[in-house]
Image (tube, helix red, strand yellow):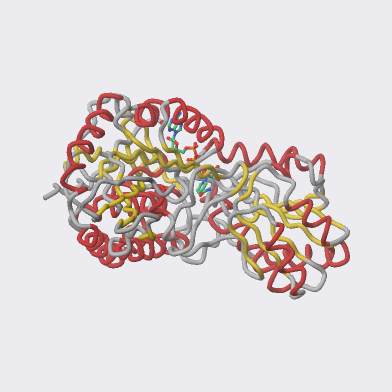
Length: 498
Ligand code: NAD
């Protein structure tokens, strides 16, 4: 039985079923980005040795977890789903205080994680291979899916409940044991999530967590010879390094990275619906979702009217501390992110038309946090850095185009390929868009954000390498396939049929 995580602010590591204090003397403070007077978490920068202990605990726990029947492994996830459902508000409040997103967004994230746990619980009964007819008489041929061993999971700050859950759940239901390295910007939320899983009955050593710096704790996890596979979500800069290191060591790697998601509006679209979706996609969670709408690509004929509609909606958004229930948009996650937001905003003022926002908010409670106004640039050039780079803040670029073909061209002109959306009622164009858009997820007449637990999630091009996450296919990354041939002729094989 795991010891409960202590409630104090100091984040502990979870190794072999115990919450243990790091021996590292280096500790970073995580303050509430909406109220910098509040220290939410103290995060020790754990040593490589502590990471190695966690990997060793996972290695030792593997044989008996592998031999636990998959449906029984799944039932533990089902219990975790129930516990998370019961404590969703408590977890969401911590998430808001530590990461900054509004309570409503945080609650949505926790509920999504419950759905992932429920779906993955059932995967324990569906972990099936295939049977195939053998080309030989009296031979039985089939495949089985088997776990790999210890898997390393590295996660970002922007979904500190659901991303750890959507990696841990398929990894452990498949029979692997894991070590999680969460982001230091939301480590306590990740710890609470693990606490629920442990309470649900995941045995000691099956899930472990070590907090610390990316380079040291994360780097040790990626490089360690006992770690068979690495599933990473985060920036392209870090992900490409992990992919490289993994390739050198012949590890299976899955990297889900940035996005620059277009919402395409054609002249026949329902502009009211499209405007609602644009504002929600661009500014919910402060634009800090990998699937956030960062570009609107719109046919010139309806652009003036549409931009006005979007601006008038976004103007009504209340920016502030996400714990206040009437707040629509919380702060940037940290100093570095608000600096990035402001750098792009200042640069944008010189090259595009600023039609809303464009400032760091000051005065009253805003002075205690990292607040930026919802910002919209119109007449953005398709190849400018405003239209090409992932800013990861509440900064929307409108790119005007002459027709559908140019819209497709612009939508596909970025290096990323995560999510997209089309607003139109023209069936031929809707299907042409679905065929030609280079994103792993696409929406028709709905926002770029969101994804359901039982559908694959991930991107094309520079967004994603490795296999998709979530859905039934998530298990493919976390398993090895073994082909089995059983000969029941009882006789020596004289000739081969192939
Ligand atoms: P990040 O790359 O800075 O950090 C992600 C994780 O990697 C953190 O835990 C960090 O400590 C760790 N890390 C950093 N350097 C490392 C190293 N050298 N070796 C091993 N680990 C290391 O990303 P972030 O700022 O936390 O998250 C924002 C990014 O995540 C955005 O680019 C966003 O688009 C992306 N994201 C993508 C998806 C997706 O599914 N495609 C989902 C959410 C977020």
